[in-house]
Image 1 (cartoon, chains in turn purple, yellow):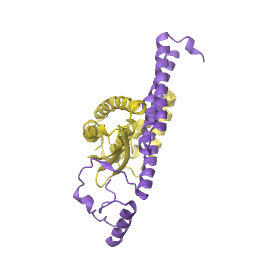
Image 2 (image 1 turned 135 degrees about the vertical axis):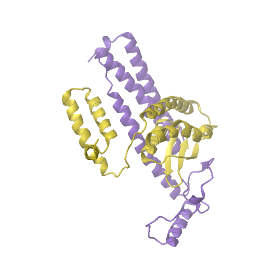
Image 3 (image 1 turned 90 degrees about the horizontal axis):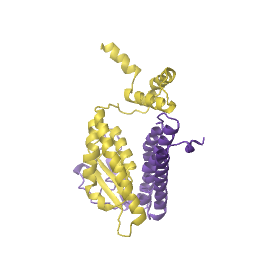
Image 4 (image 1 turned 90 degrees about the vertical axis):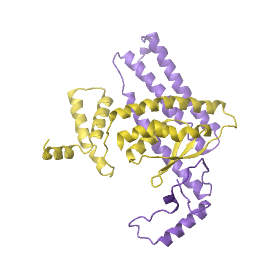
Length: 158
Length: 169
């Protein structure tokens, strides 16, 4: 399908601009992936491609096919919807795995401007129906805080 | 509506909002509103959401659809702004930029609004959802530039949480 020759100038320009802008943003995200230093920083870079990057390419596709087929083509919205809904799933799995590894190796993330914790966090209420005697839970908690090297009783405030 | 009729309706459509979404997705996917596609879409909309029942998810009630529009009106500009900020951070940032973890207290508890907030925060580059503790209501986030961290908690409450609360809770 070589419809690009029959496309009006404004549509061709708009399509080209949107494709290039989307591709450039995705490229910048890839550069960020290389330039950033830590895992947590690197999480942010590919999001450029997953948001406005893909947005630009999808909008270009909508403009191009709507004009060349002279009817509104909007099913690209679904791609945007599914990308937005599924990205957090992979993202959460990756960050959870990293957080778990960091805590296990005693490198729990340092929190900037942490608000004061509510009192019930310091002494967690016993879970109803848990059954296990509390001294065992405490021992486990103690081991846990030893392992993560976190000072104080609260080894996992977040 | 008689109680019997409403019971029948609840049996027929256990997830009305999800059924509507399935039908809309089907019609968009096929780019057609011919009677045949509407029939197939309705068939899917009546059967597919039943799978959700096995997931033990809490009921989904969209109380104020208008608030969803307002929420989207807040999210879209934020996506553009944060894309610009992250682009700048990637291309021009020096060693003075500092990334770090931030704890943000959240008022929302419904899994639906939390999932939606996770989508929003992931879709705005520069902020990443790390972990949420439902007992304390504290969300651990990672921000690319700690200069933005001060106003972050307030912005989340004002711009997202307020509307999410009106839609889902």
